Amino acid sequence: MIKKIIYLSLSLAFSSYLPDDFILKTTIGYNNNFLNFSKYEMDQSSNDVSILGDSETFDSHIIGNSLNYSKNLKIIPILLDLNFSSINYIQSKDKSSFKYSINLSYKIKSYNWFKVGYKNSPKVYLKMYNDLDQNNIPLLPTDFSSEKIFLSYSYPIHKGIWFKLQLSNSSIYFNSFFTEYDLVINDLYLKCFNLLNGKINISYKFLVADNVSFNSGLKSNLNDRSYLEKIFGFNFNLSKSYKITIFSKLREYDSENESDIVHFGRWHHHIDIIQRINKNINDNLKFSIYSKYFQRNTKSPYDYTIDLKSFKGFEIGLDIILNLTDKIYEVSY
Image 1 (spheres, one colour):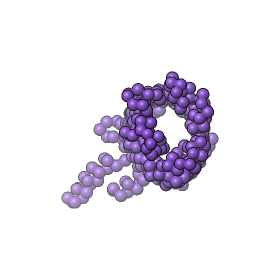
Image 2 (cartoon, rainbow, N blue to C red; image 1 turned 90 degrees about the vertical axis):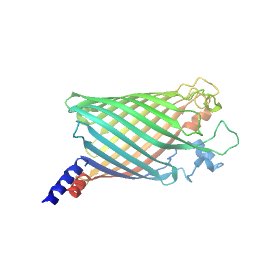
Image 3 (cartoon, rainbow, N blue to C red; image 1 turned 120 degrees about the horizontal axis):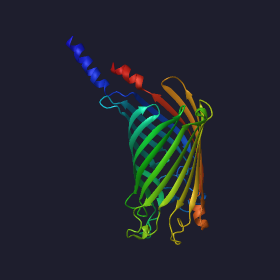
Image 4 (spheres, helix red, strand yellow; image 1 turned 180 degrees about the horizontal axis):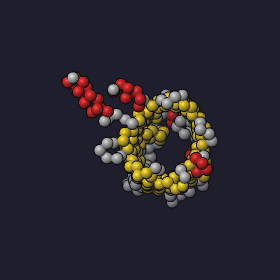
C-alpha cells in the first residue's frame, strides 16, 4: 500500500513537468548555394579557394533537428513554449549553427493573446572576408551572435479572421576580428490571418537597423552600414496539404560616403518562394516536402557592387515531424 502511495505521488509530481506537446522535427535537405555566393564570387574562387572557408563546394546537403516543448503552467494561466534547433551543413562545420527560444503566452479568448519571447543564436557564420584594419593576412571567417526580444498582441476581427501586432528589438554583434559593423535592429510586424475563408495570410514588417559601431575609431568602421528594410509576406493555402509562401524584401542602405562603393546608393530586392506539401501519416507522424527558391537583385551606382551582392539559389528537403506527447505519458504512467 505504501509503495502504491509513493508511486502515485511521484507520478503526479513528474506529470506536472510533462509537456502538453512535445514535438521533434528532423530535416533532410540540399542547398545549391548555401553561402549565398554571387556569380562574381564563384568565379573568384577559381583563383582563390580560401573564399570557400572550410567548404570544398558552393552546395551542401543539410541535416536539421528541432525540439519543441509546450506546457500550460498550472500556477499562472500562461503557455510556455521552448524550442531548441540546430542545422548542420555537411560541407561546412562553420556554417552549422544552433539556436533556442522561449515564449510566454497569455490567452484572453479565442484569437486574443499577449505574448513575449526571447530568441538566441550564439554563432551564425556568413562567409570569409578581408580585414580592412590589417594588411597581408589571410581571409578570416565572419560570424556573429544574435539576440531578439519581442512583444506581440493578437485580436480577432471577424469570423475567424484575426491579426497580430509585434514589436521586436534585436542585436547582432560580430566576432572580434570583424570590426566593420555591429547592428541593433528595431522592427514593427503586422500579420492578418485567414483571409478569403482561410486561404490567404498577409504580413508586413518594417525594420530600422542602426550601425552602432559606426565611426568608432577604426578604419574598417568609417562607413555607415545602417539600413531600412520592408518585408511583405504572403501565405497561400491552396489545399489542406499544399501551401505557397512568398517573402519580398526591400532594403536600402543609409551610407552617404561615395567612397563606400559597397553601400553608397545601394538597395536590393530579395525574394523567397517556398512550396510545401504536407502529409499526415497518423496523429503522431507527419511528412512535409518543401522547395525554396531565393534570389537577390542589387542596384548600385557601381557595377562591382551589383555583381558582388546579387545571387540566387534553391533548396529542397523533407521534414519528418513526430509528436511524442502520447508516448511520454504512456511511459510516465
